[in-house]
Length: 325
Image (cartoon, helix red, strand yellow):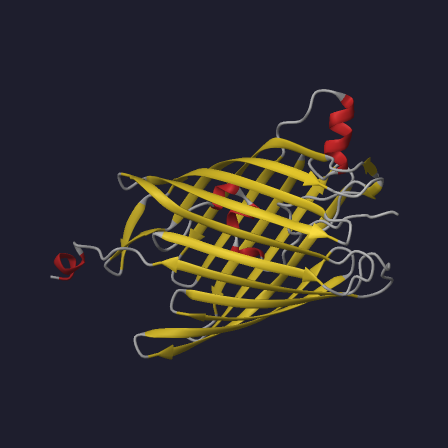
């Protein structure tokens, strides 16, 4: 029997920023961000696979009016096929944001945010069938790809290691738009011996460099567009993922409801459609992926994904009333 596992990959990438770049940890308008996601490649006839994640991050320490420390945690896992190929990852992130505060419309706002982040994690891949073959798998990636090589594992075998990721981002915001650009380097630590290094590469744990860019552009008081692009380069492959959401904000009493619809493209001729709704600080989105062109029987065509997102609002500013006076 031959089994080639797929990389866990998420279309709704904006719901889990610290998985994109650890420098994005804690960059939010609130006290805490929590997110969860689930993905099921249900249409793969030979190797259907599913994946999930849970994450939380928050600003933890303000440094005068010049910056703050932030921390986060993330769990990511999945399984593929009847062969019970299982992947598990756990990460802790720490970031420092250089974000001087300025007063705009009686609010203290950081117009610019230069952030540096580091992430430490644990990876494990295991399988319970004898002489089952599998290729690349990376539980922290949201885009497919990896080494084309195969590696043989026996009954009860598993591979685990610790990894270190780092990244840098810059964000600028004003009344009309916000944009972010970043650079990330994953898997800084590599095994010393050749055999372990080869296995690590086969499992998608080789060194990788990523570049990301995103924006939130207000078109008027109701409509906005949110483009997002991500490029990852690894020794055996390069991958691009990009697209945009069109959003409509509908005022409702003391808050608002934002409806969104998006179109996305991923390398490998995979197109995605996303639909989402945000009420106050709660968000829910659904994505459907469909591969077009020549598709192998091991990948299938369809995948469905769900994501939940919540941001705990900031505490009231005790000086706000005095400023208005």
